[in-house]
Length: 200
Image 1 (cartoon, helix red, strand yellow):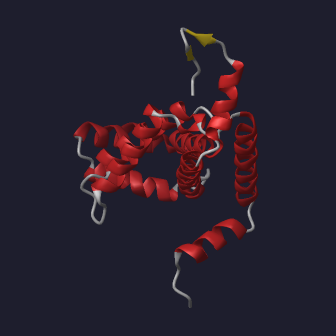
Image 2 (tube, rainbow, N blue to C red; image 1 turned 180 degrees about the vertical axis):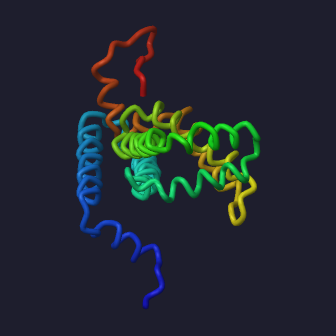
């Protein structure tokens, strides 16, 4: 059996027969079409830096999308396990109490909610759509993971902290304004005091 590696994992991810693989391909094509439209309209975005931001934003969105795939309702088993880890190892006792007494007893509500939030973050980053809002959701999810799994065996807290850092950077400088749908939206909104105001 061949040892998994990044190349083989990408091939499996892109070719797995599933409706979610098809949706991912549509998001990939959509992101490319949006980027091409912005590239055509705005000459200031025809730079290597812009392409780099697009790639990093899309990979970040892919990470969120991929991590949502094992939480598709009603597949709550894995999510229940990791929430149990948060109950046992959360850095803040109140978080542990909240998950144990509110979230887990109502997993049929919170499971789909977690899934929907992660899908929303992924789509936001992949398409460059409302990326400031997507980043804010990502920060909230990252903080929950960081504090909830802070002392869990085999977990490295810095992993989740770096995820928070990435999403904070995306909130401060929304990447959808570069070769993303947010850049197209900005063209449709009025300019006030020399600055464009939009939610992205």
